[in-house]
Amino acid sequence: MAAQFGRRLYRGAATTAVAAAAVAALSASQAPGSPLVAADGDHSSAGAATPAEQGGGGGGVSGDSPYYTDLPPLNTPDKPGSSANLPVTGSAESGIPASVLAAYKKAQETVAGTDAACRLPWQLLAAIGKVESGQARGGRVDAQGTTLTPILGPALDGNGFALIKDTDNGAYDGDRTHDRAVGPMQFIPSTWATWGQDGNGDGRKDPNNVYDAALAAGRYLCAGSRDLSTATDLDRAVLSYNHSDVYLRTVRSWFSYYNRGTHEVPDGTGALPTGPTSRNPGGSPSGGPSTTPSPTPSPSKTPKPGGSKKPTKPSDPSAEPSKPGDLGKPPTHTPTPAPSPSKSVTALQNDGTDTLTATAGDTFDGRVQVRARDGLGAPVAKAKVTFTLSGDTDTVFDGGFTSVTLQTGADGKASSPLLRAGEKTGEFTVRATVEGTSVATSFKATVTARQADAIARTGTTELSAVAGQTFDDITVAATYKGKAAAKVAVTATMITDGLVPVENDKGPYCTNDAGDPVRSIVLTTDADGKLKLPTFYADGPAGTYKLRLTTEGGATTVVKLTVEERTASAAS
Image (cartoon, rainbow, N blue to C red; front, top):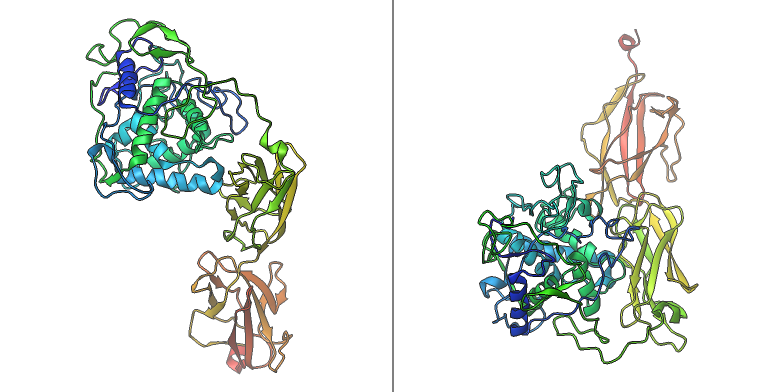
């Protein structure tokens, strides 16, 4: 990938001139930056506790493969108002290809639905996408968001990069000897195996698809209990992606740039990174190292601007985290560890949670909303609240989870992800518990059966049959608010005439699963809201009989079945 376009940097190479130039340029332009504040594998998820267990192999998401070190122009876009209101035009560098931009925004929206406390900004995904792949090579993707050609990093064979032997049998990167970073967000196969997502809903998890890769990157950055609206957590998230101070500063500079404003450009027309095309700046034209690489320093060491060969120890994090986009403040004292916010919570209150009811298969209209307070009634920020589903239900939170832990905001509030009802009807409980305490509150929720507000026979031919024969097929269609009502229970019953009809014990009948004659049976519509009734047999005295069809939800229709008297010829 690096040999195809753009200036790249060997991660961890202490003597790289490009690294020094990048840091110097950042200092000169007052671009945002911050010291290293987290160690490798700083977060854990899905039971992972170490970088290796997270699939990172010790090299973050992309296994120490190179990234673009180009910095934003000094004349950054100057856009008033929120960054959500994008200008129509702007500099070439501020333009993001349409599909790529859509993928970043969709990832932000999806993550907000399952992990609102993370506060993932799409501009951070854009910044990482810029340095990892130049926004998918300027947006060279198809209509589904998949790159037109694979974006592959160099073989991670230990020569200037991490040593990661093949983990996917070449399925993603085509290399059966070593792993390579793959796709717009440069995931190595082992990391993708843990964090891969289906961001575009096509049933596949493809690291070459910008929607899938952006959502995977978002979930990786939000792992644990990070709040990316704080500078410290944002820095830790970026460093978990690639533990390099230069990488952090480069991503931060693009993050600040995109926060000032950006605009959409057509796919394939995005500005590409500039500079030497060699993976090893200043090396051989073929892109490989011209000499045997010298040993790389520990990931916790950062190249000192000016090219000093002696790695310097990074500074400690500031006592007061800066806002994203601002320079960190130097520490003035050694901070005293603060008690866990969760420990100070004495009450967890309902904060506007409405009645929780949904039809099977639908999404609940509201979320579970709570507010954490301390002994004086003040809201408690950053308290960890776990929402758990219990009871005989197959309802899940958005994303398929039955338990989700989120942090309260500055106002002490936390909202659960959306609830999606399964097929099991009945009542269940959503319990919210403050982590590490007995403070909790519970909410009842109900899943009702699928309903239909209308049902009608689909044919118009009169239904008649000679006694002892069968009627033509009877088909009906059920709808709810004008749309097909799928998987709705329909009761078919032969009824008597009269003001208060009851089940008729004479006339046409069908058979149940056991083959026994019945005149009342419960059936279910298909995915299109349609239902073909079992075969009905003409029986009883000649005359017209009524078959009543009633749906869950109260919709009713009556179908007439006429039994004709058997003639002598028919009887013989």
